[in-house]
Image 1 (spheres, rainbow, N blue to C red):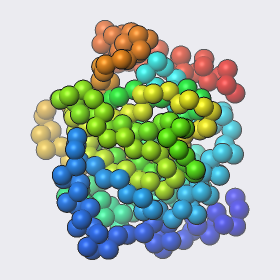
Image 2: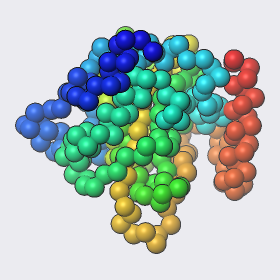
Image 3: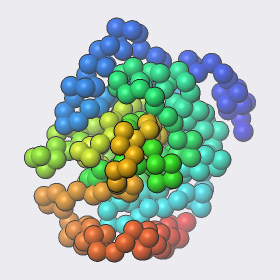
Amino acid sequence: MTTDQLIISRRSDTSSVWHPPSETKGKALASSFVKASPFPHLIIDNLFDADFLNKVAEEIKTLPSADWAPHYTALQKKRMMNNAGDLPALAAHYFEVINSPDFILFLQSVTGIMSLQPDLTLLGGGVHEAGADGHFEIHVDFQRHPSTGLENRIAVITYLNANWTEFDGGALELWNMNENRAEISILPLLGRTVIMGQSPIAAHGYPTSLPGDRPRRALIAYFYTEPEHPAEAAVDTTLYIRRPSMPLSRRIQMTIRDIFPQPVIRSLRNLQSQLVHKRTI
């Protein structure tokens, strides 16, 4: 660990990592969140210190392939690192910051969702990286945490991609499910944070495969509340959306997911991912 990493990881003052908006700006963000279409969301640039994020990105570049958990199927091609104990120092500090009381108060103020709870296990979150041909088909995130039963309310995504352009691809698409089309396209620029409301209509993804080999990197975390209706069944896994022009291989994968139970699908996915991953190490 470098001296810079030690200083940052031990620093209790989180203001050096993120820049809380003014009261006026915060009210404007809160108004934008509830009015956003196709579902509540915010796109905020420079919420986090750019120099810090650059250091996080550089740190991630040095991680060996064997440290990543692969997710390589027809519907997604990316890899993740979401074991909190294995995260490199600066990435771990980012998650400490966004799980802090001050940042959660900020999330509550701009979303209007009170009593948010972080997930220190980073289920589904952590560091995400997609390389050549990387993609994530349009989907709705799990609505309930499979272990705690808490309701998934907010996703926070911060991108780490310096000098990224539209030619690099990987834009996050927010879909209008009523019209089955992308309504918003968000380039994954360094320092860009997306705060996204979670619900059965919050369909999103980057379905077009990356055209080059530049890695697309992001830091992702979810925030929860106690379920309003605990007795109601809720989806605790990713739900993919059939869309126009979807490749046949992805349609077949979705059909398989519809036929077989989740434990079988999970085992098949893990087997396929590991086989592909071993060829990349």
